[in-house]
Amino acid sequence: MSGDILRMEGITKIYGNGILANDNVDFNLREGEIHALMGENGAGKSTLMNILFGMQQPTSGKIILRGEEVHIRNSAEALSMGIGMVHQHFMLVPSLTVTENLILGCAPKKGALIDLPKAKQIAREMSERYHFNLNPDARVKDLSVGMKQQLEILKALYRGAKILILDEPTAVLTPQETEKLFEQLRILRDNGHVLIFISHKIREVIEICDRVTIMRSGKSMGVYDIHGDPEKGTKDITEDEISRLMVGRDAVLEINKTEAKPGEKVLEVEKALNIDTEGTVHVDDVSFSVRKGEILGIAGVEGNGQAELIAMLTGMMPLDGGDVRVNGESIKGKKIRDVRKNMLAYIPQDRLTYGVSASQDILHNVIPFLTDDEDYAKHGMLKMKKLQKVADEVSKDFLVKCDSSGQLVSMLSGGNMQKVVVARELSPKTRNPVPLVIADQPSRGIDIGATKFIHRKLLEMRDEGTAILLISADLNEILELSDSVIILYDGKIVGYFPDTKELTENELGQYMLGIKTQEPEQIEGVCHA
Image (cartoon, rainbow, N blue to C red; front, side, top):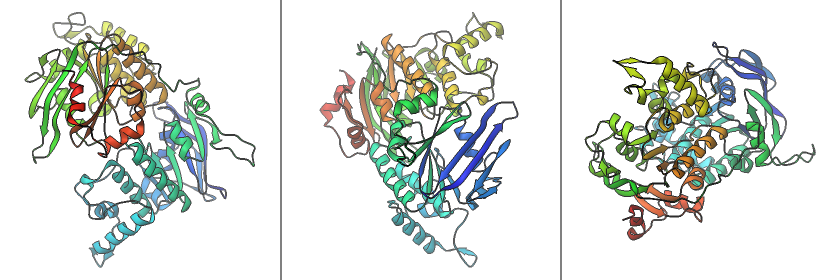
């Protein structure tokens, strides 16, 4: 490595409401490295990278790029300086082809017209150069998640990025796709690109990255050589050391889980079917059950029917066939509010769209199930003092970091937003207990501390007799929490494992990619007939 290509010096960011997001942070990149940026949600790493990519401006501090101070006023300027970013949520147009997405906004021209043959040639050559397996004519809607991510990376490279920021790049990938991505990232590094790898997955960081900068509470806790530097006499940094630096305490990386004691069936899904208006089958004759006192995990690459299945289970989408019963009672014909209030708790994947009202305070986000309770409302008037007491108590119970329950949810970190959702859905102070919890990607985009808290809460509820359905693309989460697992592929159940003790990530990945499938009689066991 031949020296620093970029330095961020004394970066401080104070928002208008007085929140200090970055506190005199230093960050540097060397030529030819993959540099990890780690920290809990709210630690300031996203703010720091948004400043580097021009999406936000620092309150103070400076950025030095290739020896010269620069002022990056927007993302277009960042790209013009060779800095690109691949966001966790892809910014692609599904109806367009790989080539059309690649050149969108900066297409090669032949006279006044777009030179499409040249664009296809560029797409093909770039794909081959970086060992990406992308068909220039393929529609984005038909690509796997891994291929969509490849396209996002190619888009940044096509626009001239030499420094590439990758935000949680393995969040939705199978182990096999992650392994392929790591091969491609090493090729990029060896071709002179510098990569910033934002992640909360410690083992992946140790595998792929050269150095790591760790942030906590808006400050840098230092930069460390992951595999040691003989010239400096430094040694490898361990998983426990990274965890301690991130959270300020020794983080428990494994969950201590007691043996499940399943009881009677709570959730019964019978031949569930979902077909869209174009005739595409998203959920194809799916049957399974979840019992009292167990966690059933659903694993699968995103886009294989999970979203449609959960929408049907929660009453947000009608079934096109089959039935869903909770404690023997069908949800068909019931209002969503009745399903949500009396039959199940739901932690949605997209907390901003379905989980919280970000423009309202914590109080109004945790009280919806209490608004028609006579203890908290009379003649249509809410008893605000009593409700505020509840909101303050559950904020404390669920470790929501906030000034008070009057704080706007939009001002919370992702992890604390998720705790607000979990508090509303799972606290006995905010609702009457329900027999079933559906947790859809409960730890997506949140830090280690919030993740472990939510995991412990789900296990507590399981041990108290609640049936829990867990949907996750994070295989660590599936294997750590689930008592049994089903795998969805192309809208069907292709595997059922009644015991997860011997199940590996690699084997799960093979089922998730459709490489392996079980015989029907093995899968039928998930119905517990």
